[in-house]
Image 1 (tube, rainbow, N blue to C red):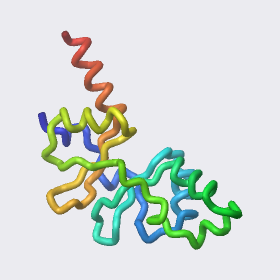
Image 2 (cartoon, rainbow, N blue to C red; image 1 turned 60 degrees about the vertical axis):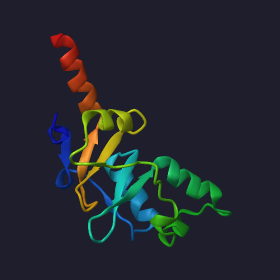
Image 3 (cartoon, helix red, strand yellow; image 1 turned 180 degrees about the horizontal axis):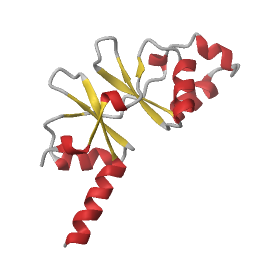
Image 4 (cartoon, rainbow, N blue to C red; image 1 turned 90 degrees about the horizontal axis):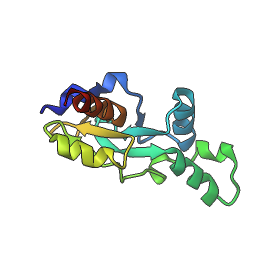
Length: 134
């Protein structure tokens, strides 16, 4: 099965550049109501994900948790690298394995360029449809 049928393409996904500040990332997530957001570099390559928890730990680990300090803290200093991407040619089994522990699965091409995400919700809807057909 071609996993790209589940893909939300990059142009329809909010993401943030690795060179952004922690504050910029936090503001973008707040504005869009996300719990996690993909991070890419200047070449469009997937770097990782930053989550609400990453921001909370950044504040907690700071001796003086002042939101203004986040303007100068680099996003890459709190980056969550456990959100592993899959290649566009991945199997549905690989997607299911990742979706078990991630709200979305980042998808990259053969050059590790970020091309979009597969949301866990779309996989669940698909599986529910198959189940009702049986």
